[in-house]
Length: 99
Image (tube, rainbow, N blue to C red; front, side):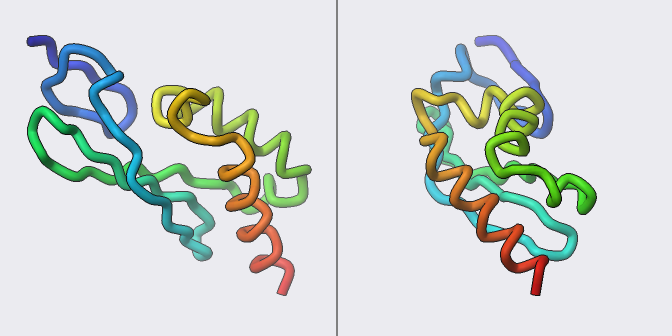
């Protein structure tokens, strides 16, 4: 068993395929998308925080998504997480910050 690390994902697994995204939460101040995920081999739940810089919120959601994908590629693997879902979450954060 190897210990793999990327960002805050620190647990003993053989591959990063061994995690399952469960749900997302939004934080508005500071803006962030939080992913809750399960590691089936341990049965434990973890959270990964993906912060958005306030100045980024003026960009198009698709551009913000690409930045997040580059920085958090393990967590936002398109085979596990829908691009449309993440872009929708980004839209909600942008709308909230305009108010």
